[in-house]
Image 1 (cartoon, rainbow, N blue to C red):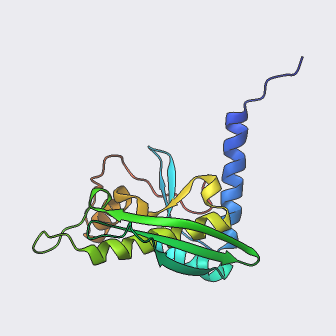
Image 2 (cartoon, helix red, strand yellow):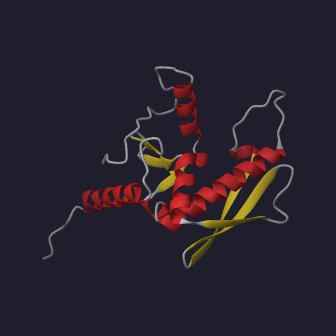
Amino acid sequence: MIPKVDEGAAGKELQLSKLRELYKKYELGKGHIFKNEIQNYTLITRAGIDKIQAKAKIEIDYQPVAGVCTSESAVIKATATMGDVTIQTFGEATRNNLKFETNAGKWKPTYAWAIAEKRAMARAVLKLTGFYEEGVMSEDEAEEFKAFVNEKRSGSDSVKTSAKAVYRGAGAN
C-alpha cells in the first residue's frame, strides 16, 4: 500500500520556492510584489512587469483585433518573443471591466485601448517568464490592488478594500 502524501502542503512549498527563484532572477523587490493574505493571490506591479520585460529581453508586437475594437471596448493581441519562444495573448478593456472617473464622468475609448495594451503586455510577460503558471497576475487586472495603492498614496493608515491587503516581500513564504 502506497502511503498518502499531503500534496497540498508540498505543492504550496514548491510553488513558493519557484516564486522566490523568479523574484530573485528578475531582481524584484517589495515595490514590485503585492500579496493578498486573505484571498491568497499575488500580483506584480506595473514597475515589476516593466523590469521583468527588460531583464528577460522580451519583444512585443501589438495589434488591435479587427471587429472587436469599438467605441465600447478594445481588444489588443500581443505577440511576444523571449529568445526562441513566441506566444500570442490578448488584453481587453470594456465599460464592464474598467473602473475610472473623469471630470465629466464620460467614457473615453482611448483609455480602454491603453488599458487593453497594458493587460496584453503584462499577460505576455508573465506567461513567458513562468509567473502565470504559478498563479501570479498583474496589477492591471486587480481593482483591489489599485484601491490599496491609492489609500497608501493618500497617507491613510487604514486600507479600505474588500479584504485586508498585506504585502509580503520577495523573500517571504
